[in-house]
Length: 138
Image (tube, rainbow, N blue to C red; front, side, top):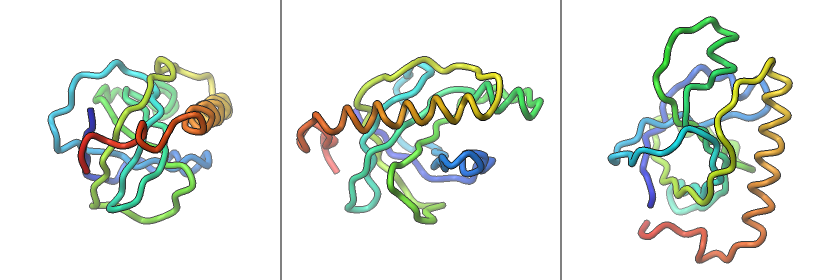
């Protein structure tokens, strides 16, 4: 299963903790997915990357901002990727569910957990063949 999403502007808080994210507005019908964190293959134009995707309400950030917004957000931290791609499209293939979404006490705890999520994703992809990482169709 793959999804295509348009990259839209978010709150840009991920970059303040060294994990910038692409916030996605999906154009394909999004099959309901459990809230949480996923290891994903990411396709931008003709290039393939790996990433960590969060599907949820970002409870740590919402509480710190005292926001009552409960909208579901979908954001992807693309590993080893530094480009301005607002208004462009990404194709995402979830590979595996890493963990449930969790509220952390502060941004430092969140950053530490994201670091662990990134390492788990790198470890997972290091054991997979290129074919296992590809979406059904590009």
